[in-house]
Amino acid sequence: MKSKTKEKRVQSMTTGKDKSSGLDKLIAGIASLVALAFFGTLISTFITTSSYGTLATLVLVVITWKITLKILKNDPNEEKRAEAQNQWAMQEKEKLQNFRSELTNYTEGDIFTARYLGGSGNNFDKNSEVIVGQGKDGIYFGDVYKKEHNTILIKDITLFEISGEGTVTTNAGVVGGGFGVEGFIKGAVVAEIVNKATSKTTTNTFLRIMTSESELYFHTSEREPAQLQILFSKVFVHINSLKNTKANATGISDELVKLHSLLKDGALTQAEFETAKRNLLEG
Image (tube, rainbow, N blue to C red):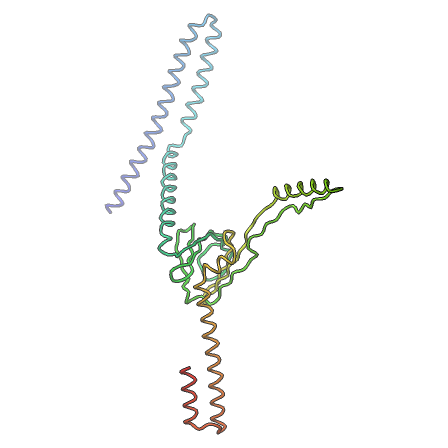
């Protein structure tokens, strides 16, 4: 109840301020109108030709009246809205600064900016700007717009692919030529100048990350595939380890099936089977 009463008081005070602000502007406008009309009359008395003095007075009156109308049309809440927008901008700037200063708590080494292309099982907006880097326990993703820190743990990553042509330089493809040695040299020089002036370097690298519950696609123009292979070395080591573990498990399973078949066929005694199985499982 007290909070509601307090809110009503604040609203009434705000409304009263808005009304008084509008009234003050009205009084100021009328006062300026009267003052300029008075000064216009004085001016007319000092001008020899009375028609010119009257014309000057009318012009001043019209100008003052337009100014008064403009003052009255001004929104009394415009200043408040501008102040609120400035406060919001300052808060967003502070959030971004805090977000970037916190990156060192989540990342190790190099970071780069990428664009989220799409996928499933995540909270990123399509085409959103994301800061990517090697995290302390996985791959780090920082949502620049939402100011959120995210990490996919290495142990949860089942697939990690880096692809793309990397950095490519293109130009107009002009080839020099001409009659004789002199003509060839001139043509070659012109071709070199044109190709340098029209050359364009672009980098296109793509990342695909999968877990048991999500799939993400990213594009970056800041790093080449080879650079990211080095940056995310921990991830590739983990994935290779998983592959080897699965391969070993498959091999052991196949050997156990063979041993059981030999036992069933009578080629192995129970004691021989148990010994062979123990040696297989213990490596």
